[in-house]
Length: 510
Image (cartoon, rainbow, N blue to C red; front, top):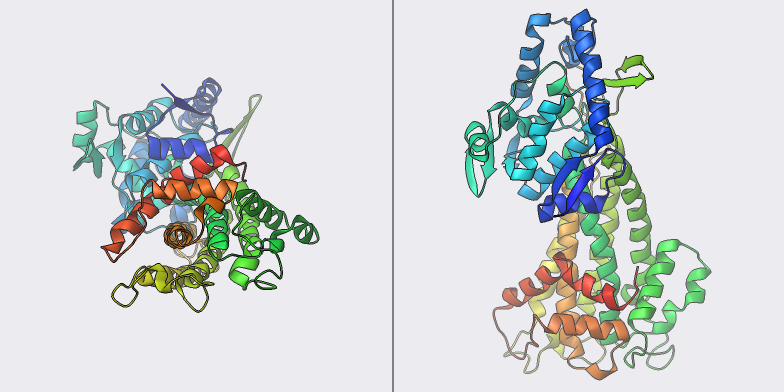
């Protein structure tokens, strides 16, 4: 049975998605276990020597100047979890919660946090057995880490809070008992080690990034289908044009469209029907490519953060020379800016997709296709209304693209006087990606409907595969029916990644 090895160094976006969505189990690397134990020895010595170190025997935030007695050190950690679990609003999905748990385990696997193996094993066991804490989405300002949502994650570990287990919503204590997992009494530093990090914004961000990769690749496929349906001018995708402006994403997107439409008899040459297409077709590689390039930056940032120690303080043991430093790795600014960038980039994929969808259904723009892609129009509305939810989602995306990372409200009596709002950025980015995949799905429905009025035998190598995949799920619409059901089939095909996967098996798009 497949297991993901968490070592704090080599875990990928795909690994986290596997744990999150496919319920793959995790195991710690042997080297990580050794480092974790060594780090805990340092904490135990600090406690024994009564050395004053932030988060071990002091208060938190503005209260860092207040010493806590040795007798109260353990209570300090429990109090931290209880007092910081102040989340509000709707709850994160199970897949986000699983990603959050896996990311926290992987961060602690670096062996710089001082947690004990006993406590970390409880979190690992919860993830592997499917005890999923109920975590509210709102409450993190994204600096001092995602304190609030991660505190909710920890509550069931100490027999508090609420968790979902085997489809039942239970008290944290009952869920742990039913799963056969012992709750823990947190030791010095352990509460802080568990909640002082960027794993909430990252859980949402990793899933958004993975889905954004699906979106940019799918956009080229759907766009190529629309290009054929509209008898578009393929010359605009000539490699020489894009090499003259060597933006990598633009070059890749243009190449994808050329490969997908290879041998197509539906695309036209410059001057055959018209000299040039409108921008939503002709500028497809530029817009899709710019989103791709922005996404590359996001992928790099997220991949680094997955394998980072983001709590505070961190414990360094260099050949017996021990240093414990308070720093700022908990600050979510790298992810906040990346997620705001992701939202803007992927929203542009939806913007141009909706414009292509409008061209397909509009008889003034669709190069001879029936109005709203239906016969006996008037009696039938066809897919007129499909453009409406696309327009609504594109407009909603524009609101969601206002960056959260440019905002900051001081917290903890102004000790934490600059925060990232990174979890808000991630949540917005995730919503934009979801909306964009839906818009692409609606365009896909329209493009395949339009192609049924063309000579389908003349499709390109890749677009023919794409068309047939859709037609396995969605039939040609010959008269009005309950349209949302057909839309949903396309949406599920795209969002599941199955549509993209099938085409990637046959055509080497990137």
